Length: 161
Image (tube, rainbow, N blue to C red; front, side, top):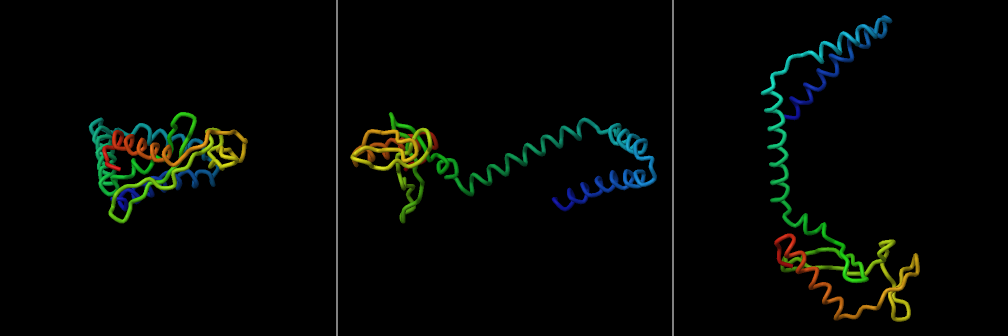
């Protein structure tokens, strides 16, 4: 299919460029280019051909998306990697454990302004770029956020995490 389309596009380009370049070399390029453009713009195309092409493109696009989704059903889920809970913004990665279950990896709080990972300084979380201070998080809070992310993912994408 692409070979036929490539040949057609090449033929169209050559049919446009050859008369233009030959006219350009002889000095009569403007009248030749105008005549050529009028010839292409007034070419009769049946309306059903245009409609069939548009419908064909839409069907092809739908098929490609369906095949891509079937090949990787987790693509949408794996793009959900940031969220906000109260004053904290979090970033994480998705992975599969050795049993094939989806898991959240590298859950870390980030600065809401710079998207940089917060550092622990004196018991608080501090952005290394803007020095903004966030309340500290304990293990229980991180587990709670991990469960909340799993529930949101299940509700949005219909998958169990």
